[in-house]
Length: 106
Image (cartoon, rainbow, N blue to C red; front, side):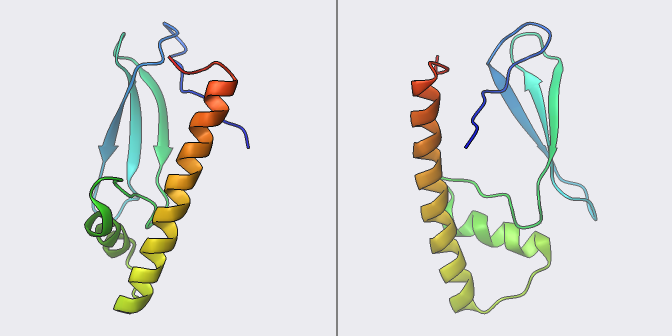
């Protein structure tokens, strides 16, 4: 797995702000702004059902699924959420370890 910290190409800062943009009929987009020089660093398109807010749990997951237009049973939704939540948390811990090993953590 490759892990990189987002870096501003203009000023070299690692301090970023993610600006989530939702428009009807369009996929969610994230515009990354440098917190230091306020320039655009990057733009990402979030896959349908791909947005999940870590501390809002199941409610956040349901909103993402609803925006994707996918239809599932309540049981299937719960199973998908529990699987995704465990994977996201485990992967995030692994990413932090990799960054620490590469000395890329501030």
